[in-house]
Structures are given as C-alpha cells and as structure tokens.
Image (cartoon, rainbow, N blue to C red; front, side, top):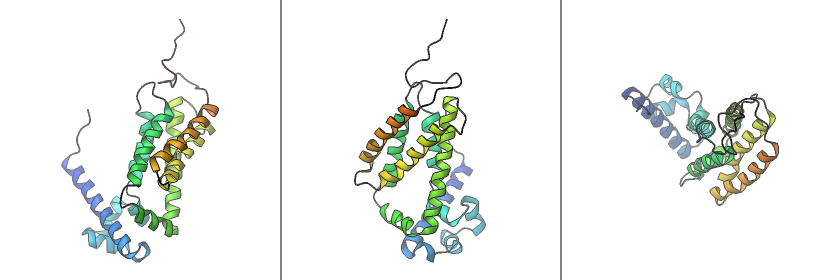
Length: 209
C-alpha cells in the first residue's frame, strides 16, 4: 500500500511547483533570456538557495517534470503486469506523456524551447539521460548487460517517439504509428535472455521436469 506523503513532503512539493509555475510565467511573459534566477526567486518569494535546492539550473525550471517523466518510463518496464509485453506497456506510457505535453497551452512553451539554444541543449541531454535509464531498465528486466545494443537502441527510439509525436497534428495517433515500427524493430532484434526471467512476453515460462 502506498503511504501518502507527510506534511513536510507536501510543503516541499508545493514550494517546488510554485517556483516552477512562477518561472514559466515570467519566461513566457518576458522571454527566457530576459529573466534571471534572482528575479524568479523574488517573484516566487523564496531565497535563491531555496530555488537551487529544488532546481539545479535555470534550464531545469522549464523541464520541471524531467525526473517524473524518467521515472514513469522506467516504471512502465519494471511495474508492468506479469506476462505483459514490453512494447505495448511503453506505448501506453508514451501516449500518456505525449498527451500531457501536447495539452492546451503547451505550444508557447515548446516554441520558447525551440528558440533557445540553451534549452534545446538541455532537452537533448535530458533525452539522453532518459534513454540511458530506460535501456538499463529494459536490460535488467531481461537479465542482460546494461550495454546491450538492442536495449539501448529501442530505448532511444522510445524517447525520440515522444518528441516526434508531440509535434504531429494528432500526437496520440502518431505514437501508435511510430510504435508499430518500434515493435517490428524489437521483434527483429530482441536478444535472448541470459538468466531466468521474472516475466515473459509470450506467456508463462515453461519449466522442464
């Protein structure tokens, strides 16, 4: 059973969200480059040290769901039901993430990111980290070395699918289209398990007697 967060955790989360919301509002109103960290802290009514205790950089203020998205991708692998295929589980989570990122009001945020070299660079490093974490989770789920090429490749495809789909006219339909190709690639290149699996994509594991 999940334990609800305590008062301290709720207060910390509320402060983090307030800082992120304040920063985004200032960035959209005045331009990303025109707003400094001290201005964000002052507007959010927190100390600069408090801001940096929640966000490691100015760029991180724009991508405040970064860690949550990374965890959701890896959880789609590690938390899926027994015998649930890997690719459909990742497709379902990617659809949910794309739905969040293409919601009403998101377009100005993505325009701001596209127009800022610093934000584009941060986004690329973030995507690389997400792909590395996802590849590690996939490899561990299959009992394979973390550097297995097929796991790293599929993880990168999944992370890139999010970026491609959110730019489409119908993001969720684009996710489905992209994942048809991802699933075909995975079926063609899926490596064999090197240890006793904790789940199987084809059904229960047969035990020799």
